[in-house]
Length: 263
Image (cartoon, rainbow, N blue to C red; front, side, top):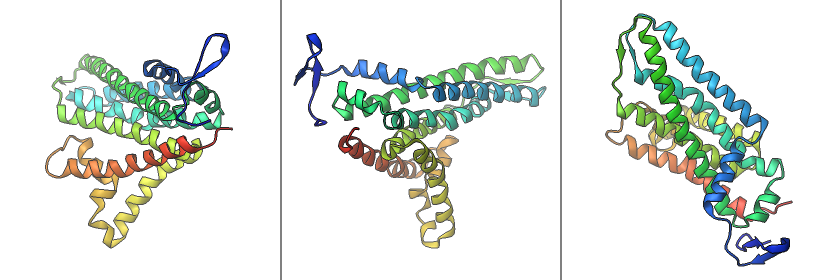
């Protein structure tokens, strides 16, 4: 079946070529549901909630009687999300192939690029909702910290919060891109976790790569962004490295998804 052909179910269960396809909004709702439709994904969500609560509780206990800031709570709470949410994003793409649901998915919507776009947008929406949940949890925890005698700082450093949000979105987008490129959950997770670290080691050890570390090493390029330092060439370095680490695997993933035979 050609990926460009649109088949829409008509009355009586027959499929009509060239009829209007599934609206993108409906695809998006389906992909939002499928993000958490597996037992593994639900377990990861539970772990994220536990992780955020643990970070906040530890911060309240350790910082008892000391000055506490909303920025610090938000940054700490982002750690569980930044670690686990990309895994859910990876599984949302690779699950189509490992669980063999791609046959059903692409039968109902043969325009595979639209399915990938829906997965990407769904993952970004979840990342933004996670940000809102983290901010609310951090504010509540800071209020509780005030009951322990801590001096509270409710001021928000917009640059730091923006940097944390940008990094969360970057990790999720990178997860979607690696999942689309590999089509295998274990392989995508290994590459997502190990490849940037390997490149960081190479750029640190190989002399001729040290001069371009900020351009090709996403760990180095993203470090200033994660703490809200957007000045100088930091943004340029980050955008170039993001193009390499997100754009390249995403392009490979789109090509593979459009051309791979569904069995």
